[in-house]
Length: 394
Image (cartoon, rainbow, N blue to C red; front, side, top):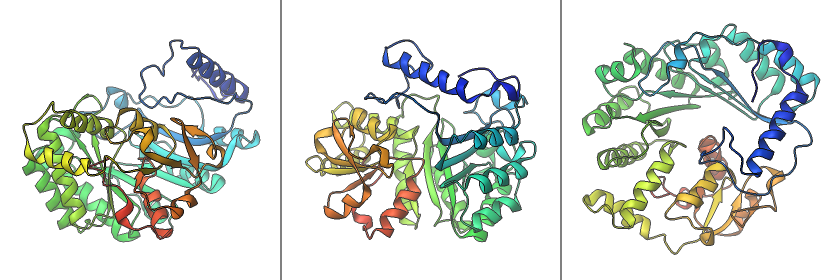
C-alpha cells in the first residue's frame, strides 16, 4: 500500500489511512491494484474505524534456493526488508492492532533462509499464539525447529514437489534435490505423524500420466500416502487442456484411493477446473469419455441443495463461476467468524457451523487455505465423509 524504507515508515495511522483509501476507491469503481482480482467480493463493506489485523503473511519473497519455472525472477533478487520484523511485532503489540484469533502464514521464496528465521518464528509464535500457523517450504533444508513445532501441533507445513522423477524435478524446480526433498518430507511426517501437506503444481512439463505415476510411486515408497495433498496449477496458464484435466482426475483418484487424509484443489486450480467442467457441461467439449464421466457424476447433484463452509473469496467465486453452485441451491453459508453471522453473501445467509448438524445437505468446503482444518472439524462434529463433496465435482 506504500513504500517502506525504515522502521519509522510503518505507522498504524498510515496503514489505516491507506486501507480506507483503497476501500473507498474500490467502492467508487476507481482503478486500483485490486482490479481484475477474481477474489474481490461485491458487498456492503463496513467503514474501517480501527486497524485490526486478523491475517499476517510474512513473505521472504526475494530469497530462494530454487528457481522454479512458474515463479518470478523477483524471488532471486536477494533484496532484504528495510525494516525489522522484531520491531514490527513490538510496535503492533504496543498499539493493540493484532486480533486474538490471528493466523500467520510464512512464505517465500524460502522462509527458512530469512535472517534470524528461527528467532523470529519462535517470537511471533509465542507472542501471538496464532489459531493457525502455516509455513510453505521447499524442504531442501531440514529444520529441527520445524519438526519440534510440527510435533507439538503448533505448525503445519506445505511442500511442493511437482515431479515424479529427478529429471522433471530439475527442469521445473531448477535444482538437483529430488531425493533430498522427498527424504525430508518423510522425516517431517514420521516425526509428527501429520501436519504435512504435499503439493503438486501442474505445469506444461509434468502432467503426463507416466510422470504422475512416478510421483505416486515416490509417495508410496516413502510411506506418505496418508499425508494431506493439495493440487494446484501454474498461475501463468489461464486454462487447463484436456490432457491436464485427465491427469488431475487420475492423481486425485489414486491419492484418495491410497488413503490420503485429504486431497483438494487450491485457489489457482479451482477456477480453472470450474471453467473446464462448465465447458464440458455446456457441450463445448465432448471429445473424452473420462471427462464426460465427471460431468455425469456432477449432474447427479444438479437438483441438490448445499451448505457451503467458507463465506469468503473462494465461496463467492464458486457461486460466481461454478457450474454446480447457484445461489438458489445454497441452503446457507457457514463460517466461524462471528462477525459474519446473520449477514449475507450472494444474498444467502451466513450462519454458525453448528447449523450443519440440524440438516443433512451435502457440504462444500470453500476455503483452500483452511481446508484440512475444516475437514477435521467436520469429523469432530460427527459429520460423515459421505456428506463432504468431492473436489472433482465442486
